[in-house]
Length: 282
Image (cartoon, rainbow, N blue to C red; front, side, top):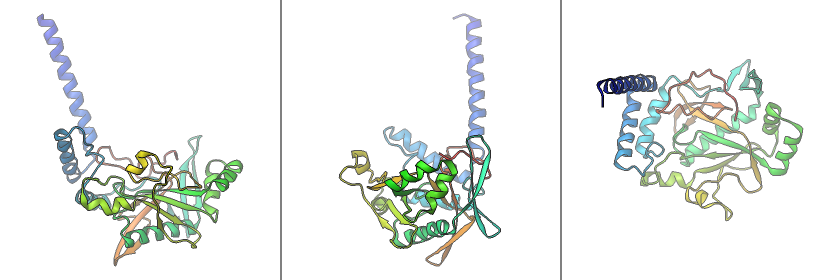
């Protein structure tokens, strides 16, 4: 190989190294050192066992450690619902990129807060954040859902969905609990939780039915309760500046609720987004 070729290769390697260093720094800088201590351990575990997925699964102790960091950080759930003139205001981006704000029914908010409080008190989940319970799927009987879908679209569909007396919500918890950790077993057993908004039915745990796929049975995951249709998402996340608050075992837990879920995780692998950004509802 000639001298010129070697010099060219050296220059390309140097440029690549610079790009990687700059890229990694931009990638990591926004996150706190404590979070990367957890991330680094998970990365090392991945090297030791390439077939595992430690960046997805966390032991209960790791979940607890990260929750303390998450609760006290500055970044909040995107598009969180706020109070204005005694009303709850939600927001989302429309197809033309304009931002729409709308009033959220009081019963919708209070019911979700009650579900969070009851679920924690019953021990069905442990934390309200992305490694445990951080979202729910509103549900309605299939015929009711189809009737609303025929009449309304977009935000109007969601508003009418929220107001229906048969409205329920399917929460998924233990999202990233490591099944190899014995301490997580009880929580993975109760990971499909259904709450209702009419005050007539109690919070309940459901399980995959006989028609469930192997994947659903293996992960104890219910996609849709039988006879019901899930539609859109509701995000929940504990945060020290949260709009709302519940009391569990004499401890005050503040939390946010949002109609935007995808991208809210704000995990240690991603650069932080601004908390006031408004994103397209999935």
